[in-house]
Image (cartoon, rainbow over all chains, first blue to last red; front, side, top):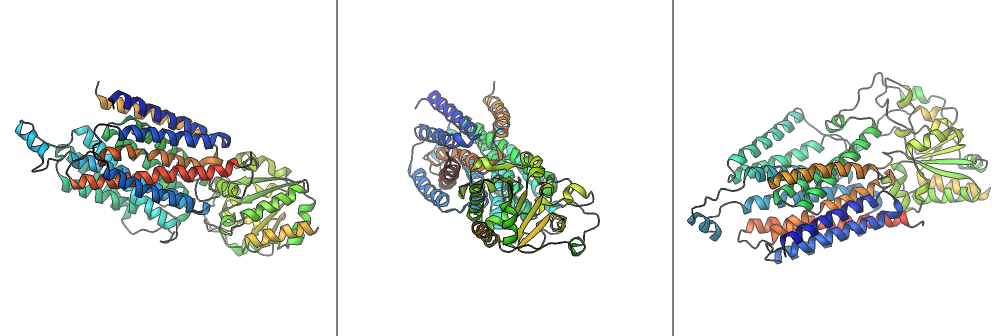
Length: 477
Length: 94
């Protein structure tokens, strides 16, 4: 196939990717957007297969079959609650793909004793000396970022899947070790531009980058995983763009940088939602608290326990109810029960909305997907900034499986580690009902004075059971 | 002009375009956005096909090409399918 035609097809594919992402700006156009991006991918793949430099198909076919089976199985079988794990895995595979593509290019450029092409080149007086400087730097970048993404994502996956402990893990001098690996890798890439046939050095750099990926993610706690997944998403894009530089391929460069930018924006949004700087998250630093609050002091004698019947009576007379879901809701598989509760309330003419904090789930937008699975209308899912001004006109707020994102300390106590974190101002509502097993603290490890407020009722119990009891109480009434 | 300069230009422009595009995606769709862009980054498959199909005699290159095709295909197939699955749940209400 003509080279110019191939390039035109690549630009068409890149345009479809861009239009596809544009389609994702609205739920109505999103499915079409995804299909457009997939069409773009098909075009890119087909013209690549027709490229005259592709002469043997057995390795391609084998890889495509294995990959398609694994990919399809993952996509069909995955539980929506496990979506962060899947994204972590896919990020890792993306990094791995860039790593192996760049490595293949590197070894393709190596002189091979006995190889016909090499012998012909030497006989003709050309020296086979491996890659040029620009290609070597791009290869080094693709391999390095790809390897960090690969191992880092697998650690993130293992933490989310609870194969390894979600707690921050580290050792003395870990940051120094990471810095050393980073500097060593950069020096190795620099040296490879001078001596591009040093394969041992290349492998050493791959090993250093793989180790670095592990060391970077191990010290990050489970609560910060949304940031890490978004960041690794960005890395996988940058690695793809770097692989594009290696291959001199425009569609790879364009789509890689789109993904890199996307991941960076999501990282930023997540950091802002948790009031943490990216450096804090990356180095596993929690903000230092002033005096730690004593939970007993906060709660002593002020926590009011309630019953489903009592809350049912409150809901009967309510005109506006806001539900605040947290990941605890998904853990209790209570999404459908909550939808039932909302339907029952709406049948009685009550206005029901959901308040979604940006870190309500385990990755950006996760809670929205979980509620969409329970067939909750996405129009009812309100972002924090939109719903916060409405709490004063809300009769009952039901908090299920959420804790830190409702903690008024973030607003009021300058000494608190979470001070400044944007929260849902649920305490402004007439009554707050908190469905929770116990008074145990959330990820931040802090007591929540919301539980002791005059307008708060605690409904102790398992999320799903408590919500079903509420539905029952309402239907009886 | 060197071809690599053109590529760097493409890269810089695409990053800006990416920022413009992504800021318009509402938080409701951030998870499908991530899986969708993940699938798009699987376009490394293009590079993987070129590496795996060059027909050379170096086994290492062939094996690396095979691994690259496998990993990138998982990304493409898995990414687009799971995104479609999620987005279908959002569409249902219309």
